[in-house]
Figure 1 (spheres, rainbow, N blue to C red):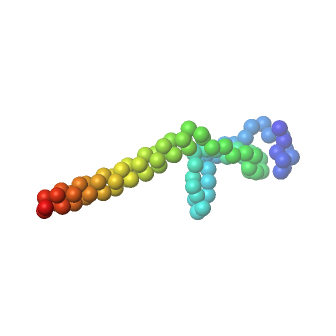
Figure 2 (cartoon, one colour):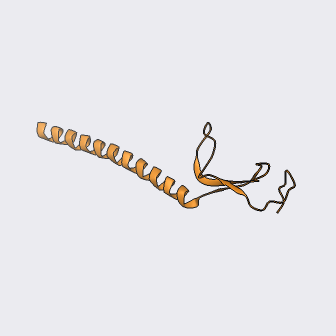
Figure 3 (cartoon, rainbow, N blue to C red):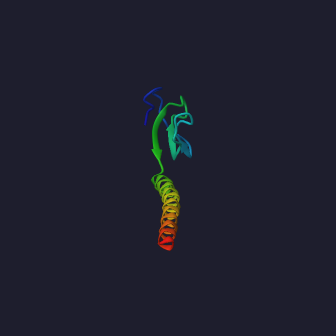
Amino acid sequence: MKCPKCGRTIPGVDMIGPTVGNQVVGPLLDGYVAVCPRCRSILGVTVDPSAIAQQVTDAMGALIASQSSHLLAQLRTTIEEAARTTGSK
């Protein structure tokens, strides 16, 4: 395989990782960047699908947990208000 930028034969690529992304713009993902070992041109980028799945699972779990505690608090308030209203009659 030849590097498309420098034209030299590439015996192997350097893998940079395990995070891919721009720290300013974000987000950082788990994955690797393959670069030419001679001119450092980027030859390819890959992300780790299991790491992405875990990040999505973690984010959804946190969202569900935060929403369920909010909904539980609302339910508790509604029950308490209903009990006060029923008790005052």
